[in-house]
Image (tube, rainbow, N blue to C red; front, side, top):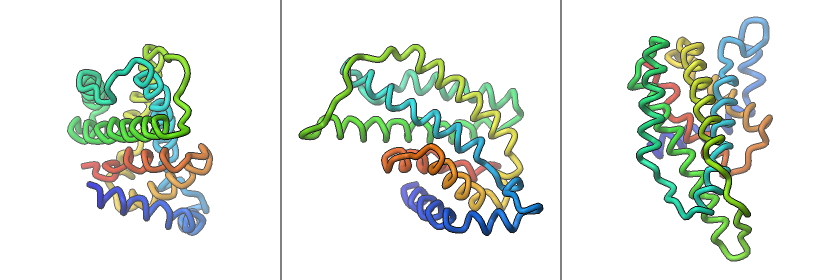
Length: 193
């Protein structure tokens, strides 16, 4: 899994340079046939919420791992998958990556905050609204998985994912920690059945 994440990271970097070529190769000069930016953008938005989750856990002393909440998320997305006629095992795998990426970001932030000169967040954000936002983004991500099912299960998935990820990283101006999380969150996307 780590090797695959590394390979996807390399592919993202390389494809950022090749994205114009991919766009020119598509009919009409657009990346419409391999455009996954709706999906990569929703994943980035979900991952950005890890910052607030980390701040809340830091303030409360809660553990980063929350198996009960993780199970709720996985059960919820499995039901959404069935409703959208997607393979629930695939959707669970994708969301396991989302959860692990979120924890990677949280751990990275904890490390920064606890380091000499680190600036821990002040206050204790309420997780209620954040969880509501995460749940809404979970629906968006599952809807994108359904809408992009043909691309995600085809040969253009990796180049499309790499180009879309590069575009999302640029638009969202992700820092290195969130780029690593983004790539980790996308690890299983091209494993669609």
